[in-house]
Image (cartoon, rainbow, N blue to C red; front, side, top):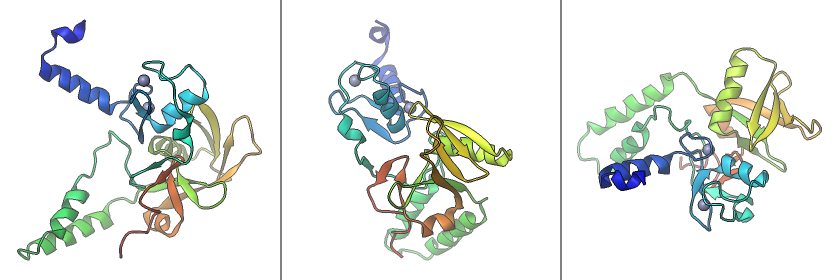
Length: 220
Ligand SMILES: [Zn+2]
Ligand SMILES: [Zn+2]
């Protein structure tokens, strides 16, 4: 109906926006995950929440959701990614590429130094991690992490977050978290800076394994 009146270009713009935003939370997708059968995409945690709530399949087309996609999911992700929708420091990637090109002229070197200096003087970002069931650590979803950090900065001893439609209590005073309805299933949480992050075995983000290995595995 509406789409018939749209110019192809307008339709493309709409499609692009749809492609970026999650139909469940209406925010830019975190860990975009497609349902294999229909291809509709959502945030990993939004889709997992929908699936766990048994609301009747894909929120868009009602098609089946293959539960296998929640078993040991793996994505090529940046463990230290910023929250989608926040001003991205998009310089890092392009700067790296520039450096890797043949060293045509020496002006490239000061660029690297400037970049490093900028990175070192930037206010250090803090990450929130929770303990893995068997080993290692997971980083919280960046949006959840932001809420916890805000609570921390407001000196709240305790806060609540919703993950996959389930309420979790983050006990900041004791540095543990547990499902609100199951206090026994507690796990340790940690607030770390980038340097400490690199010393830990961080497996992935919000239950999604990082395909390219853990933190600190970068070539030295
Ligand atoms: Zn979402
Ligand atoms: Zn669908």
